[in-house]
Image 1: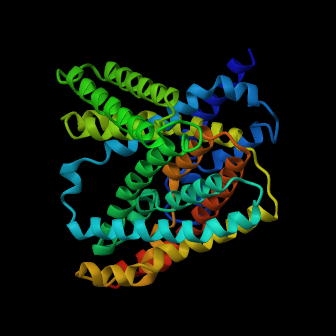
Image 2: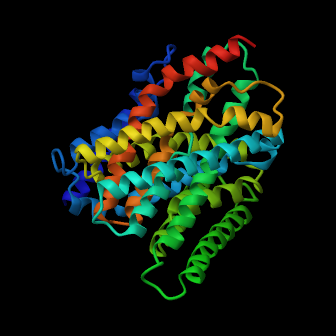
Length: 402
């Protein structure tokens, strides 16, 4: 009975919140962007969870795990559906090269800097667990969100090269991060617990990919005759839920399988003009429910060790975005300048970054992953608040001076 009450409360909050808080503001500020992104619901979920009113207690959350699983798969699908080859090929190949260089640099910088600190702060933990957490932090910081760039679009009188480059990098970077999550999830489970971990990890990763691609083709085949919109939405939710549930059962991130399903379907279907309105009509409600559950799932605690991690992560985020740009310009022979301040356009992590952090926690329910989730969410919230100001100092100024 308590589960039904909690579920009804989630639906009510999602209904009200998606209509009153997800509104664009003419002036882009940290507060307006926090409301627009919906991250405020994480804090509300924290209030409803074990730390606060305990309405979404651990027992209730266990019963609502399928909703979290669906939310992860749905976010993955929404992201993957945007990665249509016909759209991405419009951008120069050097944009993809810059995305790769930035991803590798941020990943290596974050891993190499967080691992020594983790060893000092948690000397009692096994070395392979600390290495896994450092890798997870590294992958997390390679993810960017286009939501801030989209929110600022109306403030740009002329959308020049910097805008389109930032739009591309923030759109594509999540792909590398989600693939990295799938690889981490496939191999980190088994290095000390299974025979032939390399073979087992490959089978898990390939199996999840094949399942998602196969379901994407099946969904495409079933929708070639263009079913009614209400049936199409039911089919879509059913497919995403099935793939997400199967992924969770076999220890594969639903975020990854949902993304592969979205990429496969997007690149074969011709129903984009029908699918997009359906996605937008459900995106906000499901996203609110997902964020509320994330906040309730969060075992929040703050001490000196977590504060040190958060401070380091924020510094690494800013440094990792700014430092490689000059070298990348020389390597790729970019046609226009890439000043370091342009890197401040990429501080927003968004929903994909949050989903990544939660996926790590759900795959590895350990005390150390509670530390990871807390440090990750605080760092994400802090950079999200700072990102509108950083954007003013970078992309807006650069575009106006072109």
